[in-house]
Image 1: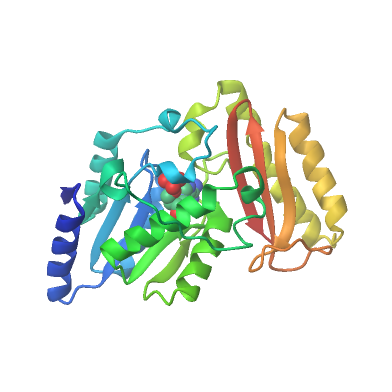
Image 2 (image 1 turned 180 degrees about the vertical axis):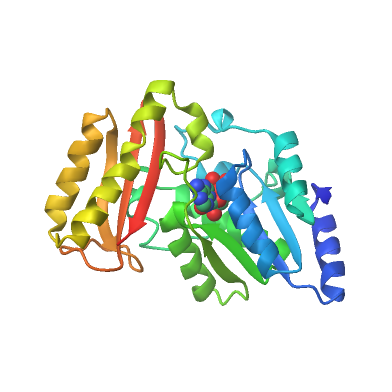
Length: 278
Ligand code: AMP
């Protein structure tokens, strides 16, 4: 496994793989890797001949009040995990490599970026699409694997790929969960023992609606009210709970097969997200 920090070297190494007629798979991450990330890496390994993983805590997707320095980092452990998966190339550039001081450009996917997480994090998705497009231009992957854990992000990236005629195929990986159901996230490391126990309610509330929907419930208001109550009872401070169309992210009045339920909840100062598709 090669580990590089420079754009030139990534381009050179990927070009060499291409000359050997290898297809290139790519998994962008912010590091502090867990089984969720590794499942995406495994998908990339299955679907392509040469696998690139990036590790970059992208400053432009953090809001000014969010503490970028608090984001967990463990490069040594990440590299060991990726080596074990058979990854070919890890790209972990510095901030100045990707954002020189005279950097001026932003990529925005309108509308989809300003709902749900975009309401309390108005700059977040612009930061995501800007860095993902930059990374796609550097790696030029045939496929790129993203997790359904960040469903809105996946929808926005798919839109960007279509709108900008990119040649990368987006593959989505399922949400990997802890044994009790909590969606794996690098941010779970910040939870106190108490909050960690309570946070499982996110998955439980989504499962409740899933079961109720199977039993005939279609009233969105009722479903969301029940979720709100369950989460509130466990001390979660709700950012949003919504039932939306999984392609347009527009709210739906009636639950249907394919409806996306999405939640964002604070436990103390840690913001967790989760979702499920009915
Ligand atoms: P991050 O490092 O948080 O930016 O995430 C990198 C990629 O891993 C994104 O495509 C996420 O959606 C994905 N991811 C994060 N957590 C999970 C999880 N629990 N299951 C599946 N994919 C995940």
